[in-house]
Amino acid sequence: MKKVIYPIMAAVILVSSAFVTATSADEFKLKSGSKIAFKSKDPNGEFKTVKGTVKFDEADLAGSKFELTFEVASISTGNGMQNKKAQTEEWFNAAKYPNIKFVSTKIEKSGSDYSVTGNLSMKGATKAYKVPLKVAKSGTDLTFIGTFNVKRSDFKVGKSSDAVPDVMSISYSIPVTKK
Image (cartoon, rainbow, N blue to C red; front, side):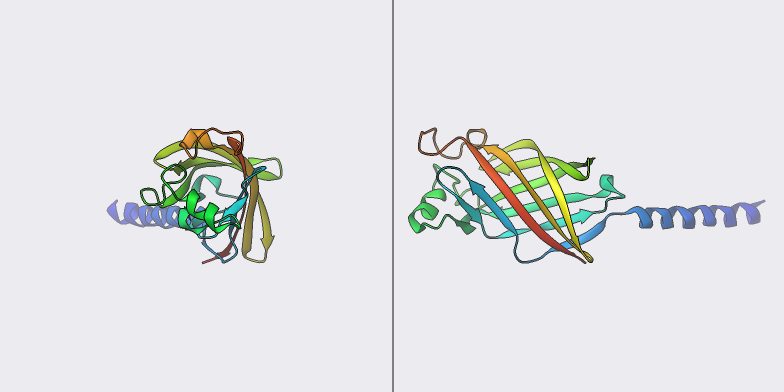
């Protein structure tokens, strides 16, 4: 009896591990050229340094994941004084909170595109966001593209004013290549 059960168990384990391997999301590394831009009537700019990991597979969205970090010190508004002010305690407080982080919790198909739900952490606060995601393919390389809005007041970034709106439009383009 044992002689029959052991080979069957081995076959089940082998088939199961092959299935798990075949359905795990592909790992990608970020390429240069990532862009996280913010826009309002004033100011406009971008975060130049983006790091992180990406797992993505259209056939395995449950196994797909985004973990991205943007360095506050890499902010570029086109105005050196504005860049320095953005790093002060009133705004992003780069000394205490050097990074902005986004970690996905769920990825769903939405028509021909996707939506990514995740936690955006900035200046000591974390809020859940649902972000639209388009995927542009070029061979094994992908570029993730989208635009969404963030309320500064949710993260205590800057003070309420007529000069800088509370809602900022964030656009992103994140090119990746398969590992």
